[in-house]
Length: 448
Ligand SMILES: Cc1cc2nc3c(=O)[nH]c(=O)nc-3n(C[C@H](O)[C@H](O)[C@H](O)COP(=O)(O)OP(=O)(O)OC[C@H]3O[C@@H](n4cnc5c(N)ncnc54)[C@H](O)[C@@H]3O)c2cc1C
Image 1 (cartoon, rainbow, N blue to C red):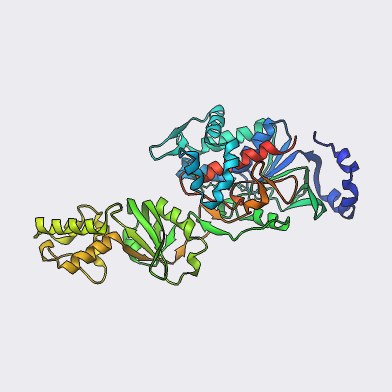
Image 2: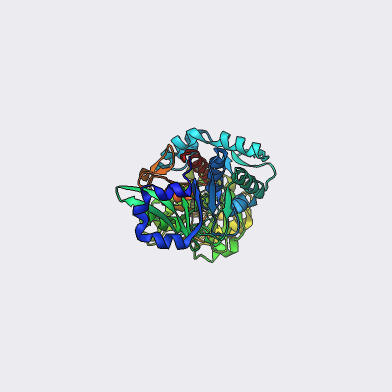
């Protein structure tokens, strides 16, 4: 049962509070005692509040901005890629080593449970051929609004423009308990707190990483934070000439100082005025995060004909040369590459010249061409920062969280969810599913 205010003041907490009694009383924002305060009305926060509300608990959400679910609303280019049809094992593997934590979480609330919940809230979903799951309406706002209804239907209150600044604890370092959450307006009191303030990515939406600092102050470790799912930046002016060009199936690799390809991703890329983006680039950035900064001359390498060996590419070029010796090289390349890319490949130093006829290509030139098609190079300056990243790599390590409940192992009554955790997935609906699932589990676990 939720203790009343008087019970709260009569219990053993009073002596602990005495030193700050006056401050607390003057700044307490209302005398209400909530069953739990959820910090952040994003993906994890709304679902956790909804689940706790369903269980009859009195929940207050403190939201820093003036809108709930802002990232859900812009996610998936406004369509909200809310989950993925990948089998459980593959889904978890996609998060890398840290994903193993999710076995317990998904055992309780995974894709079917999410789709069931959204269905009850009036949002039907569809699965695209590549496995990505979206609302049938293709409208991300439908998901955000439905989760808002879920969060508030149990009577949960949301206060906007109310940034959490600190978790107020009582007790000694051996046994600390939650007292409430401090905001610029004062102290909100509760016996449990769910941290759902998101990461540092896309900071223009209010996610400036406050939660990490708050959790650090409450004794948690924060592993180094890096922008992830962010585009690569290249100084090559060639990118500008290729801007807007999308290549649906390439292998993109990050080449390190020793000339070795360190990580690769296959899929779509899109050239931007400042570099390379698109799903394969975003996914590659997860591996580059935290390492690329220390490389002296990283390069991006494009295999433009994935799945075909260099020998086979060379054989096909030889065949083309034999078949149409009078054909201009650039026109031959345009048969299987977009024009702008064909021109770019042939503009690199060391030939062969675009105006050459196929029949005049030397063996060395044919080999150079093969090399370019299998490993087309772009210098790389790094990845875009937090302001453009879709997620954060790093956060609260899993050893500090109980995966059966999302409760902190360091502070009783404190639950940590979503992007705050040291766990990030690729594009494709993985990150939202993880936020929804960890949020639901926290909301299900706070004591009644
Ligand atoms: C452009 C973009 C597109 C994306 N598309 C997809 C997609 O299609 N599929 C997918 O799976 N993932 C996608 N993601 C990632 C996904 O949105 C996040 O992984 C997910 O929203 C994280 O959920 P969260 O609840 O942890 O944080 P958030 O959803 O970011 O919510 C955090 C909330 O906390 C609030 N807040 C911050 N600080 C405080 C504070 N001090 N006090 C109170 N409130 C605070 C914020 O204002 C926000 O409302 C996308 C991300 C971006 C940036």
